[in-house]
Length: 414
Image (cartoon, rainbow, N blue to C red; front, side, top):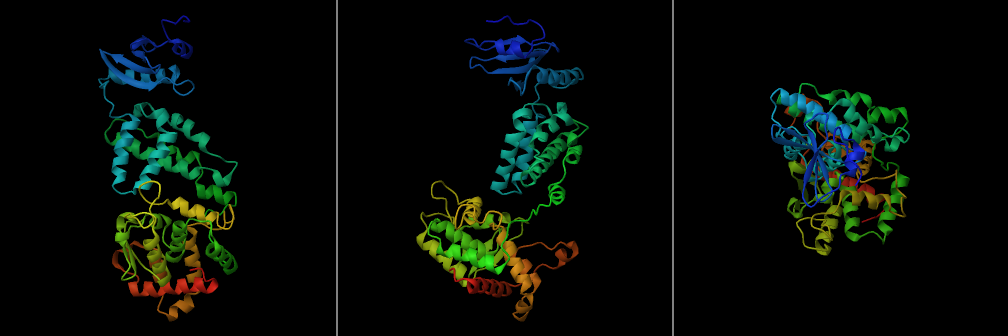
């Protein structure tokens, strides 16, 4: 085995430490409290030894977390230990604080969105910072991780939305430590300024950030014809796509709808507040065509499930991304990429209704009825506080049947 320095070990010295039959430790030095455990498995973990007590830092990972990073963290912690801090406290490690944060968020977020947050943090932040005391994390440390994510050369894949969401999560985590007076500075405050907003960046580069949507009748005719004549798409997915188009709701609601929320007898889809973006319950009046789709799905559903569109190979329901993928690839792989999207059919609905408001007005339908069908929240807080209902279920039913008829007059697709 190569000679190991006895003082102030470097990365090459750590690499040369060979595992033994039992765990052993080596002094790393500078500060004197910094040591490393070498496990029989080969895993090497830095730690601080102070007054007979230990505190784990991070695992040695070449190029990610080495002696330089461990020393910097250990020096900061050593200063805090001299002022009476508890060496064994893991309470303020970023990973521990993130667990507190995500538990609070779970109460107000869907399972899918919560998982998305966790996946982002596990991918970009936790690998480096999970076991680090938040008091030792600097602005430059966070910027070093986030900066490579930004892709200024491809506006369509700049990752700016992801970056700003991560910063928002980090900001909330740091605020937990500030509220406990563990730290007095939040380095996340200035991170947003280092990256342009997605909207500003897209405008600068002439990119339309809205969901791809079909708004011209000729394009809509081609799409509906492709949908009607398709014989390759899974039939359950095809019904989900049709329901998405007819009901103009959010794709996540279509993918996760349960039979208990569908009133086939009265033709109403009741979406609970917990499943709505704005956390207000929503009712969709089902057109005759939408009811036909649901009755067919109930008759030919591949498996018995609480979900209208169950996942066949795993428990749960189909993915909203699966609906979007089916739309993009309808009529050939990528045919409707950047032309149509699951969420974009809400824009199709809104555009068609807006262009035909005069005709709808004869039927007693106003723009408020259209906004109600889209489950849009009133932006004026005063009106929102007092105007508790903007459309009746009867008005909604007239509107949704009119829309279904409009589409079927273009192409009889159901």
